[in-house]
Amino acid sequence: MAFTDPPRPRRKPSLTPMIDVVFLLLVFFMLASRFGVDAVIDLPLAGAGGSYSGPPRLIGIGPDSLDINGVPVADDRLTSAIAPLMTKPDDLLILRGRDGADVQRITDITRLLSQAGHTAFVLVE
Image (cartoon, rainbow, N blue to C red; front, top):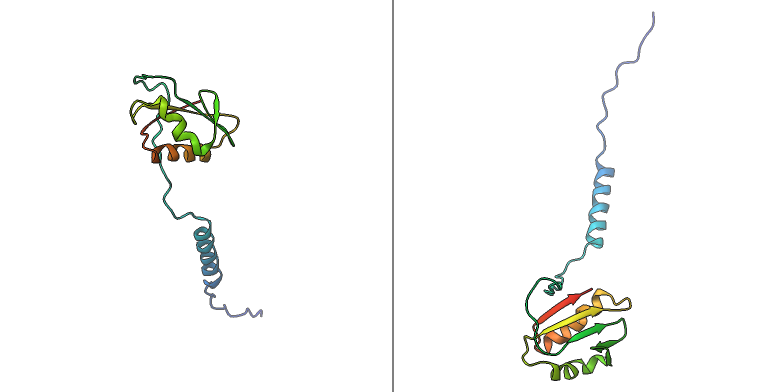
């Protein structure tokens, strides 16, 4: 006659490790997230139409340099150098990134021009 062990009661799974994992994921995603408002600058691309009048106003933006119509200019003198070419503040300014200029540099120059009262920009490739 063979005796069998009486059936053991089923053990409930422990939720503690799962709660720890969820907590660690929550902390990870909170630390990896960025909370803040990104600045948005409305830059239409060239070719969208519109009219252009007046002298050429091409601003070349390099990583460490600026030029207006091919003439080098310092960052702090940009607004005074562009003033003779403008008839009104909403005249179109053409911005062109050169020599590996990053988006932050173009944004900084656009913000500088916006603070000087210029309102119309076109970004060309």
